[in-house]
Amino acid sequence: MVNLAFVGCSHIHTPSFVDRVLNRTDVRAKSVWDHDAVRAEANAAKLGVAVADLADIARDPEIAGVIVCSETRLHEELVPPLAAAGKALFVEKPLGMRGDDACRMMVAIEAAGVLFQTGYFQRGTPQVRFLREQMALGNFGTVTRMRASICHSGALGGWFDGEWRWMANLDEAGVGAYGDLGTHGLDILMWLGGEVERVAAILEMGTARYPDCDEIGEGLLRFKSGVLGSLTASWDDASNPVSFEVAGTEGHALVMNGDVYFQSNKVEGADGRSPWTDLPEAVPAGLDSFLDRVAGREGELVSVREAANRNVVMEALYRAAAQRKWVDVENS
Image (cartoon, rainbow, N blue to C red; front, top):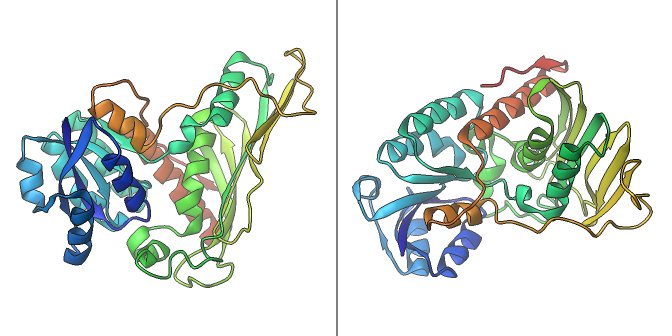
């Protein structure tokens, strides 16, 4: 049995992460820390463990890894010391408030040589894996454009009115809806298309339920490969039927309501008229693959360099929106 600790419990995903740890037989929580004593006690009680000091967690040889779900502004304070202590790290996305702090954490984590993972769970879905597989096989021909749309009704439903309110405050989270949700779509676009060269964007307050931040945004990306990309994210959408699209000189794929519509001049029967059912199996991603790896099993991870580069590109998108012009991206 592998021991873990929760370091920070403020993220909206914390309750589901607690449940996932409780439902496994190969890992368990040993301790919890949060700067908010009430929150720390509540989550420790759910896990049946004790509240601990950060220093105690860092030096406890029985704790193999930590799950960092603090406010994003605390990541740079928490992550490097834990990395230096040799702890495997799951750090909820985004890694940093901006590109600079994310890159500093990247340097510290790479120097420590510890296992790292962040919360880009979309990589494990059959639909996304299919797109990546078909691109690798060349069945789209020369890819010309890609699109990702990651939206929900968080602002419409008041999801961040209570204990999660910090996530709609740029001083605490670094980003609003576009950076919070859009980072998932950005990860997939970059996983498929590689490094981004230039970006432009527009961000809006939407309903203005959370006037501290953006609630909706659209961005354009030019990849170093020449592929064009677009990224939308929103807390103001009643639904998000079309999530991903890839187009090329020999084919096209659209993910709509979970179904893949695939057309390719190179694949027999791929006419795009009905859902394509020959998809890869889902694989663990995000927290699940981190838990698999710390428990000694195989599992795909997002590198800390990838995580930092998502921060760099997202910061460029926010800067492009503020300056109302195209902005060049310098990847780490």
